[in-house]
Length: 219
Image (cartoon, rainbow, N blue to C red; front, side, top):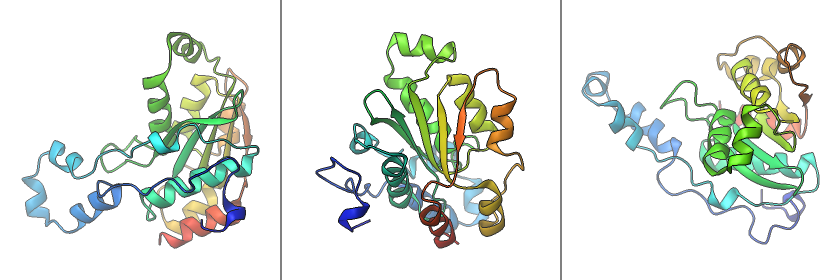
């Protein structure tokens, strides 16, 4: 993302500095380069230590004016973390039109650590008492979540329980399943939202050509 027109507005330093050597990519290389016999002797904490969680600091407080602006941030986040599994999630406070939390796929540490779950977990760690109460009551209506890939039922459920106003994605579940071979639960986000006690808007196809190219490149 080097072209000026690809940069979200109001960002003096774009994209944020690349992550250090402690990335998910390095953990994948560690696992792939280690024999099965050797892995049997490795403790789970040691595997996790092969990669520190992404430093979210440079990604917080980024401004935008549109869905496309925030999707660009999610795309760049996914590129920098792990191009092989390019799921990037960004939570935006629509009152301020700025990012407040981000997350990437960490399923080599925990199979439930999808980008959206990591972003929500990050948000809760910095949230104040009022925001925690709002989340518990499903009333974080000023929050929107952007993700490069359509949220699975697990992630969509988490978004609903937080009471986010909307989930915006780039590539669809059918496209990701057919193109990448990643295991997907064949239940669309709109179907989960339709069964929810809180109304959550779902919009897909935002910068779809770019997110589709991202998943294709990871093959």
